[in-house]
Length: 463
Image (cartoon, rainbow, N blue to C red; front, side):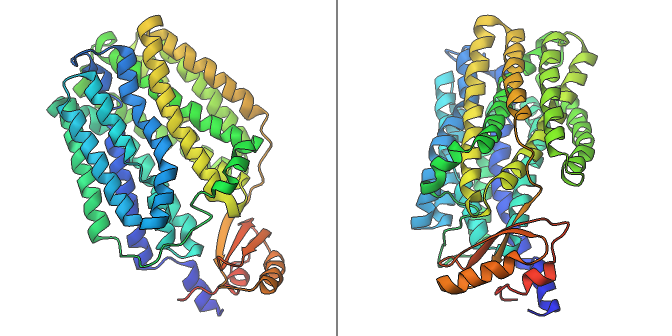
């Protein structure tokens, strides 16, 4: 491949950028709908027939259970019937769950609606469609854009949820969530090109034959435990925090955005140096340990300093800074630790753990709040996070390698073996594996040393 062709292959096309933004829009619209009730739901739950704190916690977290149970089966289904039917069907189910929750007058109706929301589990299908519609060389960029959109959705939801609650109440949030789902369907129908053939992508989809291995890898399991505990912390904390702000500090629910907006904004600015330190200076283990320790301190502070505005704001800032930093670091750890050819399976185990953590946090947080008190929720979170700190402290320092894909065309076994040796000799390529039937080289590279021109000389991507 000539140098100009290599540069062209290295850059995303306008079509790829449009597809990436469209898929990020679908994903983020759904996540925004799920997150928006987080900062306000327990303020509303008391108005529902039969409500208890335990049931309110289940209502908040139940979507995580159905999401965890169905994301892999629906991903496999998308291999058989196509991505877009699964995505559109999942968004319709999500919209139906939102309508059910909006119209519910009992806590059980909301639980059913939230469970139905989670049953519209489109994450795996969206990732697979992104892989179908992007060249191998740009897969990581597309996935990163979708990941960023989730983080932005969370930040918007923390501000938008209280605002909508003040204007329309929690039922209004559920109605808005249904509207977001319909907007996602419109994007899928009108903005995403039709695919005549869907292929299996090892970097984004789950190989059931390797799933057990992912669950036995002690380093990957530490990351899975981490994301489980992180989202347990999030859901359990927000069983309590809205009530503390409203009843303890006298801030009406519709005004909670005035707390979350500056706290979220400052926390996202604060983590930038630590992300750079983790990736550029190769201090990811140290940054991870510091963030988990900060999360422990934040939980203890939320329990001890919740009776003062200054104490609450400082500990919320610490909490969100640690949370957002860990949300950024943990997926990159999976990419560093997992074999490039099995990255999709490792990420599948990771996201399943995340959603199970959502459910466990809602259930445990609600039960503890009801039976032991609000402070006990934060103590519980702190103790569980201490376990994570111990697991993280025993984690091996990961190699600072990135996953890289290269389209090499269909090859015979002998050709694939010969090309593997050539790719392994490219400066910066630390590991290379070619699956002949895929026509793809799965690489682990040191980007600081990688000779991109030499690497793209082997690419068969059309430009």
